Length: 123
Image (tube, rainbow, N blue to C red; front, side, top):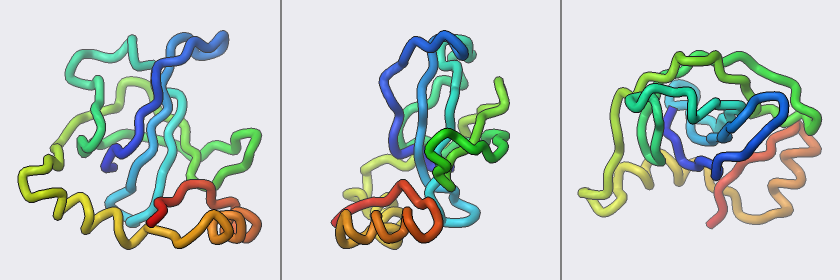
């Protein structure tokens, strides 16, 4: 997974301090959302940053919004395996993200109504 978004840590009664991450599943070239990640219980090597490539064990979850991208992280399975930097003027990042770009909010609404897609990039 290429991590594209990471939320600010949030205090949860159920999960303690957590973050939510979203990114691109590099095997399927599709969006994936992972929650909860108990960020403050992770080893330093597991504290992921944006645009790092990670391996993580997840399982699908049916959150209250029924978003098809939503998955639950299996604790302590994060392994950072790479990073895509900007030394090539964002070329590699663009190659991964551009195929997932939508034209409008209306397209997102249509996709959500069709199959519960909730994550997209915009032009």
